[in-house]
Amino acid sequence: MEVWDHEGKLYEVNSYYSLPDNAWQYELVGLTGAPGTGPYITVTIPDATPDDGPFTPRPVSEVMFSAGSGDVPWPILRRFIDLVESSGDIVQVPADSASPITDPRASPQIPPSPGDA
Picture 1 (cartoon, rainbow, N blue to C red):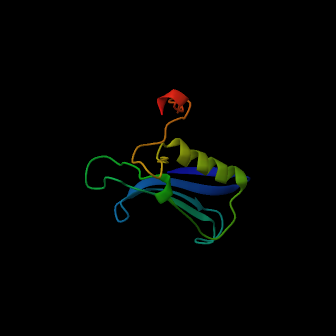
Picture 2 (cartoon, rainbow, N blue to C red):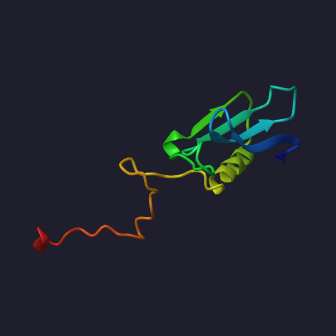
Picture 3 (cartoon, rainbow, N blue to C red):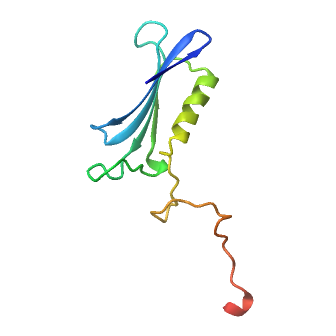
């Protein structure tokens, strides 16, 4: 758990494995003001192997974002997004493959030459 401050308003940031959801969860909760009135954001990343070993994130297409009432200043939202992205839990996967997308510059696709047809 971390507490972030922005212009005197406090925000709690949590990251944990949610057993009921079989997912890793990141949440941002506004602490300033009456309980339950501040902003609330969650990012839920489903586990591809919930019964078999360490957490393995499912593809980004299965990641869920939820937001509750309240306003979040851009610097806090940006910091939260950076935290989630830097975790390595957001995994890009091509639609027709189970393997992660690689940088296209790493393995360029070379079209066949006219004589190869």
